[in-house]
Image 1 (cartoon, rainbow, N blue to C red):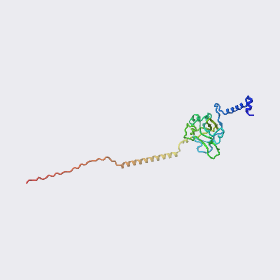
Image 2 (cartoon, helix red, strand yellow):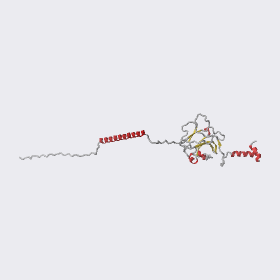
Image 3 (cartoon, rainbow, N blue to C red):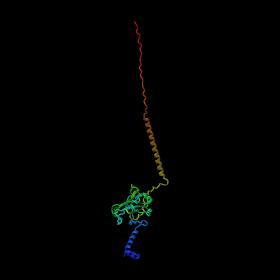
Image 4 (tube, rainbow, N blue to C red):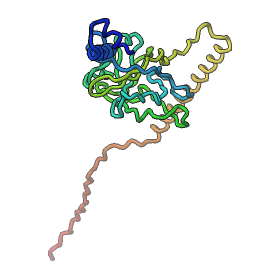
Length: 266
C-alpha cells in the first residue's frame, strides 16, 4: 500500500485527493524558499583544477580547470540548454543568486559590486566523453583579453589574486535547470619583489669600484683631448675668404710735345 492510501483514511481524503496532495508536496520540495521558483537540480560534482602539468596552470590572472565531462546527462537537461561557469569570490558564494532569465546574467563589469559573474557558456555536447581520452580538454578561466567587460559570457582576466570558487550552472529560457557543487578555493600567483641587498659592501668590491671609476675618468679625459685637438686643427686648416673688391685702374697716355723749328724766310 502506498503513502497516499495510508494518509487517505487518516486525513479523511479520497485516493485522488491524496495523489494530488503528494504531487504538491513533491513540487514544494523543489521550490526555492521565498522565491516560488523551482530549485535547480543538484549535480554532485566538484570542479577541479587541471591535474596536468601545464605551463600557465596558475598565473596572476588565469587558472585552468578540468572539463566536466559526462556530468550533464540528466533527463532534465536538453542539448539546447546553456552550461555556464560561475566565477565568484570565496566570500560571495553565500550571496550568489542564480539568474532567472538570460537578461539577468551578470557580466564581469559588475564583479566588483556582486562578487560573481557567469562566463564561458557552452552546450553539453562540448562536455561529452570521459577523462580517459588522450585529448587534452581543459577550461582556462580569464583567458580572453579582448572581450568587453559589459558583455555576458566575457572571459576577461581575473582582477586579483582571489581566492576564487567556481561551479557550473545549467540554464534555459525559463531559468536555472541544474547546478554543481562549488569548487575549493583557488588562489592566483602574486608578483614577488626582489630582495634588497643589505649590509656594508666588502673591501674587494670597494677597490673594484674605485679602479673602474678612475679608468672611466681617464677615458673621458682622453676623449675630450682628442676632440679639442681635432677641432683646433680643423680651424687652422680652414682659409677664411672675404668679399672681393674690384678696383678699376685708369691708364694714362703720355703725350710728348715737340716744338717745330721756325722756318726762316729767305
